[in-house]
Image 1: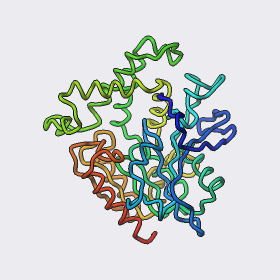
Image 2: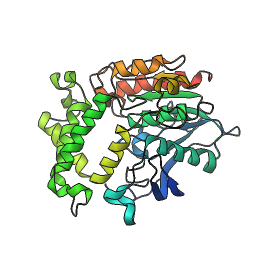
Image 3: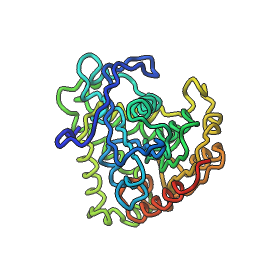
Image 4: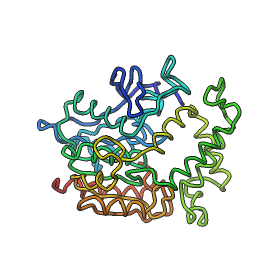
Length: 345
Protein backbone atom coordinates (compact mmCIF):
# COMPACT_ATOMS: atom_id res chain seq x y z
CA UNK A 1 0.00 0.00 0.00
CA UNK A 2 1.01 3.65 0.10
CA UNK A 3 4.18 4.18 2.10
CA UNK A 4 2.93 5.34 5.50
CA UNK A 5 6.37 5.10 7.08
CA UNK A 6 7.26 8.58 5.81
CA UNK A 7 7.02 10.85 8.83
CA UNK A 8 6.45 7.92 11.18
CA UNK A 9 3.91 8.80 13.87
CA UNK A 10 3.36 5.40 15.42
CA UNK A 11 5.16 2.77 17.45
CA UNK A 12 5.65 -0.93 16.80
CA UNK A 13 5.49 -3.72 19.37
CA UNK A 14 7.50 -6.82 18.43
CA UNK A 15 5.58 -9.92 19.50
CA UNK A 16 7.90 -12.64 18.28
CA UNK A 17 6.49 -15.71 16.58
CA UNK A 18 2.82 -16.09 17.42
CA UNK A 19 0.63 -19.15 17.11
CA UNK A 20 -2.58 -18.20 15.31
CA UNK A 21 -6.13 -19.48 15.66
CA UNK A 22 -5.66 -21.29 12.33
CA UNK A 23 -2.76 -23.30 13.76
CA UNK A 24 -0.28 -21.44 11.57
CA UNK A 25 2.58 -19.34 12.90
CA UNK A 26 3.07 -15.68 12.13
CA UNK A 27 6.84 -15.14 12.37
CA UNK A 28 8.25 -12.04 14.01
CA UNK A 29 4.80 -10.50 14.42
CA UNK A 30 4.68 -6.71 14.67
CA UNK A 31 1.77 -4.66 15.96
CA UNK A 32 1.78 -0.98 14.95
CA UNK A 33 -0.08 1.39 17.23
CA UNK A 34 -0.48 4.98 18.36
CA UNK A 35 -1.49 6.35 21.74
CA UNK A 36 -2.98 9.66 22.86
CA UNK A 37 -3.12 10.93 26.45
CA UNK A 38 -1.74 9.41 29.63
CA UNK A 39 -2.65 6.35 31.64
CA UNK A 40 -3.99 7.43 35.03
CA UNK A 41 -2.76 6.15 38.39
CA UNK A 42 -5.51 3.52 38.57
CA UNK A 43 -4.64 2.46 34.99
CA UNK A 44 -8.33 2.26 34.13
CA UNK A 45 -8.90 5.21 31.75
CA UNK A 46 -7.93 3.33 28.59
CA UNK A 47 -10.04 3.46 25.42
CA UNK A 48 -9.16 0.84 22.81
CA UNK A 49 -10.15 2.02 19.32
CA UNK A 50 -9.05 -0.57 16.69
CA UNK A 51 -8.74 0.34 13.02
CA UNK A 52 -11.09 -0.60 10.19
CA UNK A 53 -10.71 -2.10 6.71
CA UNK A 54 -8.33 0.13 4.68
CA UNK A 55 -7.97 2.37 7.74
CA UNK A 56 -5.08 3.08 10.08
CA UNK A 57 -4.38 5.05 13.25
CA UNK A 58 -4.45 8.30 11.27
CA UNK A 59 -7.97 7.51 10.10
CA UNK A 60 -9.23 7.04 13.67
CA UNK A 61 -7.36 10.18 14.79
CA UNK A 62 -10.10 12.26 13.13
CA UNK A 63 -12.25 11.50 16.19
CA UNK A 64 -9.59 12.22 18.81
CA UNK A 65 -8.69 15.62 20.23
CA UNK A 66 -9.25 18.35 22.84
CA UNK A 67 -12.92 18.94 23.58
CA UNK A 68 -13.97 15.78 21.77
CA UNK A 69 -15.64 12.78 23.37
CA UNK A 70 -12.29 11.02 22.93
CA UNK A 71 -10.28 13.74 24.65
CA UNK A 72 -6.65 12.86 25.47
CA UNK A 73 -6.84 15.17 28.49
CA UNK A 74 -9.12 12.61 30.14
CA UNK A 75 -8.53 9.32 28.36
CA UNK A 76 -5.60 7.14 27.39
CA UNK A 77 -6.57 6.23 23.83
CA UNK A 78 -4.87 3.33 22.08
CA UNK A 79 -5.36 2.71 18.38
CA UNK A 80 -3.88 -0.64 17.29
CA UNK A 81 -3.52 -1.22 13.56
CA UNK A 82 -5.19 -4.28 12.07
CA UNK A 83 -2.91 -7.07 10.87
CA UNK A 84 -2.79 -6.79 7.08
CA UNK A 85 -3.13 -3.00 6.85
CA UNK A 86 0.47 -2.48 5.76
CA UNK A 87 1.72 -1.11 9.12
CA UNK A 88 1.21 -4.08 11.42
CA UNK A 89 2.46 -7.42 10.05
CA UNK A 90 1.02 -7.83 6.55
CA UNK A 91 1.65 -9.75 3.34
CA UNK A 92 3.34 -6.67 1.90
CA UNK A 93 5.86 -6.18 4.72
CA UNK A 94 6.64 -9.74 5.80
CA UNK A 95 9.89 -11.11 4.48
CA UNK A 96 10.66 -14.71 3.60
CA UNK A 97 8.42 -17.68 3.10
CA UNK A 98 5.38 -16.27 4.94
CA UNK A 99 5.12 -13.03 2.99
CA UNK A 100 2.89 -12.18 0.05
CA UNK A 101 0.46 -14.91 -0.99
CA UNK A 102 1.78 -17.20 1.78
CA UNK A 103 0.95 -14.85 4.63
CA UNK A 104 -0.88 -16.89 7.29
CA UNK A 105 -4.58 -16.60 8.02
CA UNK A 106 -5.15 -14.03 10.79
CA UNK A 107 -8.48 -13.79 12.62
CA UNK A 108 -10.21 -11.08 14.62
CA UNK A 109 -9.43 -13.22 17.67
CA UNK A 110 -5.71 -13.19 16.80
CA UNK A 111 -5.79 -9.41 16.46
CA UNK A 112 -7.45 -8.90 19.84
CA UNK A 113 -5.20 -11.34 21.69
CA UNK A 114 -2.19 -9.42 20.39
CA UNK A 115 -3.86 -6.12 21.30
CA UNK A 116 -4.30 -7.48 24.84
CA UNK A 117 -0.56 -8.08 24.99
CA UNK A 118 0.02 -4.50 23.85
CA UNK A 119 -2.34 -2.92 26.37
CA UNK A 120 -1.93 -5.11 29.44
CA UNK A 121 1.59 -6.50 29.16
CA UNK A 122 3.37 -3.62 27.39
CA UNK A 123 1.46 -0.43 28.27
CA UNK A 124 0.42 -1.43 31.80
CA UNK A 125 -3.35 -1.04 31.40
CA UNK A 126 -5.52 -2.70 34.07
CA UNK A 127 -9.05 -2.08 32.75
CA UNK A 128 -10.68 -0.94 29.52
CA UNK A 129 -12.99 2.04 30.04
CA UNK A 130 -14.36 1.68 26.51
CA UNK A 131 -13.93 -0.58 23.50
CA UNK A 132 -15.17 1.10 20.34
CA UNK A 133 -14.67 1.12 16.59
CA UNK A 134 -16.22 1.46 13.17
CA UNK A 135 -16.86 -1.45 10.79
CA UNK A 136 -14.06 -4.00 11.29
CA UNK A 137 -13.06 -1.90 14.29
CA UNK A 138 -16.50 -2.65 15.74
CA UNK A 139 -15.92 -6.37 15.15
CA UNK A 140 -12.75 -6.13 17.21
CA UNK A 141 -14.55 -4.15 19.93
CA UNK A 142 -17.18 -6.90 20.19
CA UNK A 143 -14.37 -9.45 20.42
CA UNK A 144 -12.77 -7.51 23.28
CA UNK A 145 -16.03 -7.45 25.25
CA UNK A 146 -16.71 -11.18 24.80
CA UNK A 147 -13.14 -12.42 25.23
CA UNK A 148 -12.43 -10.29 28.31
CA UNK A 149 -15.86 -9.56 29.85
CA UNK A 150 -14.38 -8.81 33.28
CA UNK A 151 -12.01 -6.17 31.89
CA UNK A 152 -14.18 -4.08 29.55
CA UNK A 153 -16.44 -1.51 31.25
CA UNK A 154 -18.18 -0.03 28.20
CA UNK A 155 -18.77 -1.08 24.61
CA UNK A 156 -19.82 1.08 21.65
CA UNK A 157 -19.49 -0.63 18.26
CA UNK A 158 -20.75 1.51 15.37
CA UNK A 159 -21.70 0.24 11.92
CA UNK A 160 -20.28 -3.19 12.66
CA UNK A 161 -21.34 -6.57 14.00
CA UNK A 162 -20.22 -9.40 16.23
CA UNK A 163 -19.95 -11.77 13.27
CA UNK A 164 -19.91 -11.63 9.49
CA UNK A 165 -23.50 -12.44 8.54
CA UNK A 166 -24.29 -14.19 5.20
CA UNK A 167 -25.17 -11.11 3.12
CA UNK A 168 -21.98 -9.41 4.26
CA UNK A 169 -19.99 -12.54 3.36
CA UNK A 170 -21.52 -12.64 -0.13
CA UNK A 171 -20.73 -8.97 -0.75
CA UNK A 172 -17.10 -9.64 0.15
CA UNK A 173 -17.00 -12.66 -2.16
CA UNK A 174 -17.99 -10.34 -5.00
CA UNK A 175 -15.26 -7.77 -4.52
CA UNK A 176 -12.70 -10.50 -3.87
CA UNK A 177 -13.60 -12.26 -7.12
CA UNK A 178 -13.34 -9.00 -9.05
CA UNK A 179 -9.75 -8.64 -7.90
CA UNK A 180 -8.74 -12.27 -8.35
CA UNK A 181 -10.15 -12.35 -11.90
CA UNK A 182 -7.28 -10.16 -13.08
CA UNK A 183 -4.78 -12.57 -14.64
CA UNK A 184 -1.96 -10.35 -13.37
CA UNK A 185 -3.00 -11.26 -9.84
CA UNK A 186 -1.62 -14.76 -10.48
CA UNK A 187 -2.96 -16.29 -7.29
CA UNK A 188 -1.31 -13.58 -5.22
CA UNK A 189 2.14 -14.13 -6.74
CA UNK A 190 2.05 -11.06 -8.94
CA UNK A 191 5.19 -9.37 -10.19
CA UNK A 192 3.48 -6.04 -10.79
CA UNK A 193 0.28 -4.75 -9.15
CA UNK A 194 -2.92 -6.21 -10.65
CA UNK A 195 -4.27 -2.80 -11.53
CA UNK A 196 -7.34 -3.97 -13.46
CA UNK A 197 -8.35 -6.15 -10.54
CA UNK A 198 -7.75 -3.38 -8.01
CA UNK A 199 -9.86 -1.00 -10.07
CA UNK A 200 -12.65 -3.56 -10.34
CA UNK A 201 -12.43 -4.16 -6.60
CA UNK A 202 -12.91 -0.47 -5.84
CA UNK A 203 -15.70 -0.04 -8.37
CA UNK A 204 -17.63 -3.02 -7.02
CA UNK A 205 -17.12 -1.86 -3.45
CA UNK A 206 -18.50 1.66 -3.99
CA UNK A 207 -22.12 0.69 -4.65
CA UNK A 208 -22.46 -1.08 -1.31
CA UNK A 209 -20.86 1.61 0.83
CA UNK A 210 -23.74 4.10 0.72
CA UNK A 211 -27.47 3.54 0.07
CA UNK A 212 -30.15 3.74 -2.58
CA UNK A 213 -31.22 7.13 -1.23
CA UNK A 214 -27.63 8.37 -1.48
CA UNK A 215 -27.61 7.76 -5.23
CA UNK A 216 -31.23 8.79 -5.89
CA UNK A 217 -30.70 12.09 -4.13
CA UNK A 218 -27.34 12.65 -5.84
CA UNK A 219 -25.63 13.04 -2.49
CA UNK A 220 -22.31 12.20 -4.12
CA UNK A 221 -22.40 15.85 -5.17
CA UNK A 222 -22.13 16.77 -1.46
CA UNK A 223 -18.85 14.85 -1.48
CA UNK A 224 -17.56 16.85 -4.43
CA UNK A 225 -18.29 14.39 -7.25
CA UNK A 226 -20.03 15.69 -10.35
CA UNK A 227 -21.60 12.36 -11.21
CA UNK A 228 -21.61 8.67 -10.31
CA UNK A 229 -18.71 7.93 -12.63
CA UNK A 230 -16.52 10.45 -10.79
CA UNK A 231 -17.32 8.68 -7.53
CA UNK A 232 -16.49 5.28 -9.00
CA UNK A 233 -13.22 6.56 -10.43
CA UNK A 234 -12.25 7.87 -6.98
CA UNK A 235 -12.93 4.47 -5.41
CA UNK A 236 -10.81 2.86 -8.12
CA UNK A 237 -7.94 5.22 -7.44
CA UNK A 238 -8.17 4.71 -3.69
CA UNK A 239 -7.81 0.95 -4.00
CA UNK A 240 -5.00 1.22 -6.53
CA UNK A 241 -2.87 2.53 -3.67
CA UNK A 242 -3.21 -0.79 -1.83
CA UNK A 243 -1.28 -4.01 -2.05
CA UNK A 244 -3.69 -6.68 -3.34
CA UNK A 245 -2.59 -9.34 -0.86
CA UNK A 246 -3.04 -6.89 2.02
CA UNK A 247 -6.60 -6.18 0.91
CA UNK A 248 -7.42 -9.87 0.69
CA UNK A 249 -5.72 -10.67 4.00
CA UNK A 250 -7.96 -8.19 5.85
CA UNK A 251 -10.98 -9.28 3.83
CA UNK A 252 -10.49 -12.87 4.95
CA UNK A 253 -10.25 -11.69 8.56
CA UNK A 254 -13.55 -9.85 8.06
CA UNK A 255 -15.34 -12.76 6.40
CA UNK A 256 -14.45 -15.23 9.12
CA UNK A 257 -15.27 -12.94 12.05
CA UNK A 258 -17.40 -14.51 14.79
CA UNK A 259 -16.98 -13.70 18.49
CA UNK A 260 -18.08 -17.22 19.44
CA UNK A 261 -15.57 -19.09 17.31
CA UNK A 262 -13.06 -19.85 20.04
CA UNK A 263 -12.42 -22.21 22.92
CA UNK A 264 -14.45 -20.12 25.36
CA UNK A 265 -17.76 -20.31 23.49
CA UNK A 266 -17.28 -23.14 20.94
CA UNK A 267 -19.57 -21.56 18.37
CA UNK A 268 -22.37 -20.67 20.78
CA UNK A 269 -23.05 -17.15 19.51
CA UNK A 270 -25.86 -16.37 21.95
CA UNK A 271 -23.70 -17.43 24.88
CA UNK A 272 -20.82 -15.27 23.69
CA UNK A 273 -22.92 -12.11 23.48
CA UNK A 274 -24.80 -12.83 26.70
CA UNK A 275 -21.42 -12.98 28.48
CA UNK A 276 -20.80 -9.27 27.86
CA UNK A 277 -20.77 -7.32 31.12
CA UNK A 278 -19.92 -3.94 29.63
CA UNK A 279 -22.47 -1.15 29.51
CA UNK A 280 -23.29 -1.42 25.82
CA UNK A 281 -24.61 0.90 23.14
CA UNK A 282 -24.86 -0.58 19.64
CA UNK A 283 -24.97 1.98 16.81
CA UNK A 284 -25.86 0.54 13.41
CA UNK A 285 -27.00 2.66 10.46
CA UNK A 286 -30.52 2.08 9.18
CA UNK A 287 -29.23 2.12 5.58
CA UNK A 288 -26.08 0.03 6.07
CA UNK A 289 -25.91 -2.79 3.52
CA UNK A 290 -22.87 -4.51 5.09
CA UNK A 291 -23.89 -4.64 8.74
CA UNK A 292 -27.67 -4.40 8.63
CA UNK A 293 -29.93 -2.78 11.18
CA UNK A 294 -31.92 -6.00 11.59
CA UNK A 295 -28.83 -8.04 12.41
CA UNK A 296 -27.54 -5.43 14.84
CA UNK A 297 -30.87 -5.30 16.65
CA UNK A 298 -30.84 -9.09 16.92
CA UNK A 299 -27.30 -9.08 18.34
CA UNK A 300 -28.24 -6.40 20.87
CA UNK A 301 -31.12 -8.53 22.19
CA UNK A 302 -28.51 -11.08 23.26
CA UNK A 303 -26.40 -8.54 25.21
CA UNK A 304 -27.64 -7.83 28.74
CA UNK A 305 -28.98 -4.28 29.00
CA UNK A 306 -27.75 -3.19 25.57
CA UNK A 307 -29.19 -0.06 23.96
CA UNK A 308 -29.58 0.24 20.19
CA UNK A 309 -29.15 3.80 18.92
CA UNK A 310 -29.08 3.77 15.11
CA UNK A 311 -27.83 6.42 12.76
CA UNK A 312 -30.66 7.52 10.45
CA UNK A 313 -28.56 8.40 7.45
CA UNK A 314 -28.54 7.99 3.66
CA UNK A 315 -24.76 7.63 3.87
CA UNK A 316 -25.25 3.97 4.75
CA UNK A 317 -22.20 2.18 6.05
CA UNK A 318 -20.11 5.31 5.59
CA UNK A 319 -22.30 7.18 8.09
CA UNK A 320 -19.94 5.97 10.80
CA UNK A 321 -16.69 6.73 8.99
CA UNK A 322 -14.52 8.65 11.48
CA UNK A 323 -14.68 12.37 10.80
CA UNK A 324 -16.41 12.10 7.42
CA UNK A 325 -19.92 13.52 7.93
CA UNK A 326 -20.47 16.30 10.51
CA UNK A 327 -24.08 15.53 11.43
CA UNK A 328 -23.40 11.82 11.87
CA UNK A 329 -20.24 12.53 13.87
CA UNK A 330 -22.15 14.87 16.18
CA UNK A 331 -24.69 12.09 16.78
CA UNK A 332 -21.87 9.65 17.53
CA UNK A 333 -20.04 12.12 19.79
CA UNK A 334 -23.20 12.60 21.85
CA UNK A 335 -23.54 8.85 22.30
CA UNK A 336 -19.89 8.44 23.25
CA UNK A 337 -20.12 11.22 25.83
CA UNK A 338 -23.23 9.70 27.39
CA UNK A 339 -21.68 6.28 27.60
CA UNK A 340 -18.37 7.52 29.00
CA UNK A 341 -20.13 9.62 31.63
CA UNK A 342 -22.31 6.69 32.71
CA UNK A 343 -21.03 4.35 35.43
CA UNK A 344 -19.81 0.97 34.34
CA UNK A 345 -22.33 -1.86 34.81
